[in-house]
Length: 169
Image (cartoon, rainbow, N blue to C red; front, side):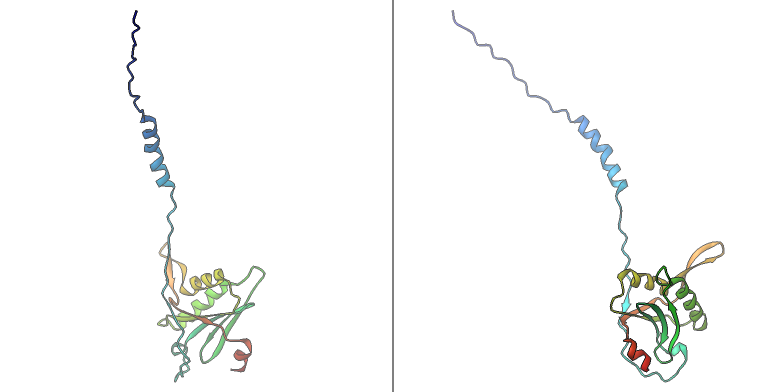
């Protein structure tokens, strides 16, 4: 008797990707919504002008300077020298007092919009950024809404003169 070979019919298995597609349909929007977008802001900075001889001694014709020392802020002009020194307190630099003084200066010379920030050698990056934000503008209330009022948006950055040079001038 001859044996018969019964071949079983092999069927190709179907891939059921319905569950995977459902997962992707839910997962993609969730990931897109939870994504953090990074906002980068660029400020245009200027190099400090070389030492110029100023004919007038008015504050509006002089270069306004913010000197960041290890122990204080010094607001000065290029010709008249230091206008005000704002010492560090227990919490660090007093940016609020700096902002108030710069508002007074801006009220005296409203058309002036340049300032040079001169840094001590060990000034931290965060101090520089906060100082730049402070001298550029301040928040004020105008007709029941908070707005940014302009102080000195044109900023130059340089190295602070040494203490011995500053006292001899």
